[in-house]
Length: 328
Image 1 (cartoon, rainbow, N blue to C red):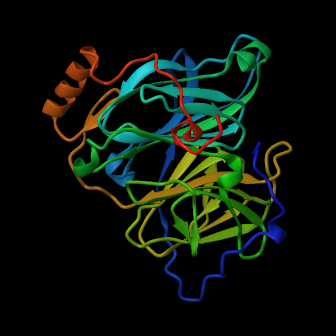
Image 2 (cartoon, rainbow, N blue to C red; image 1 turned 30 degrees about the vertical axis):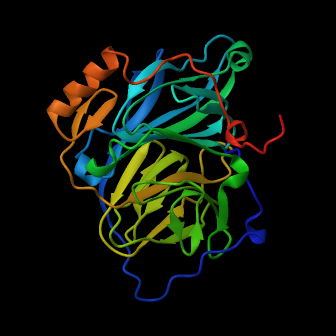
């Protein structure tokens, strides 16, 4: 871990932030709790489990692994419904196969991301491919749920594949950190993810003892989650270890530093940093459905039970299938 690496000395760099920068302090630290999902795989979940207004527009963060599966042990999530939000699955190691009722889908492997907009409603499955189940191996990924505002909850479902090679790679100002920008803007750089809700989502590997300063929109919230290793967040150096999430306060920049010594043979401190423009609307939630009212939740359940969210067996298509000029 991680799958996508690069020589930071060859990458575009973030500009050093000036004296007088309004650094965001840490308002809260949350330790992820463990629970079973899908066919029985363990996730670490920092939220929900805290005040969700602090995470808005995000609804859920599940950290899957890292786990070394033996042959026959890998598990996933069979066909199930969603409505009213987006799921973003980022694979660091291993493989997951996605299929959905629109015909979208693909194989998520080392460093790839799938962005599924459930919108008005969709059925999908996320399962390790049979080859991976048979041989076993290292599995490590993250799933993020991003809320949609009321005006967009009925948008038609869609699917984005973000290949590992499409992720925007950036270096910190001093070259001590590699940033993989998956979505949003950062210091004039743009991630490939196309979002309905304005967010920034990145994965950084910070070398032992190195510092990472990030310009951050003042109207976004800011969450830092540790995938592995240890370090410190904020101008006062709040300690943050694997499986912990820091909720930052107001300001126009984030600062963090990796500890000089990292556990085991880890090459650095791996963190997810995410933030977005809060939606500030009522949230009605029931399992895989996230709407604004209880009546809308009841409607979603009834639509699913009546088969109005789609079919589980549909032909899989890619972007090439939809291109009339593509070779056949």
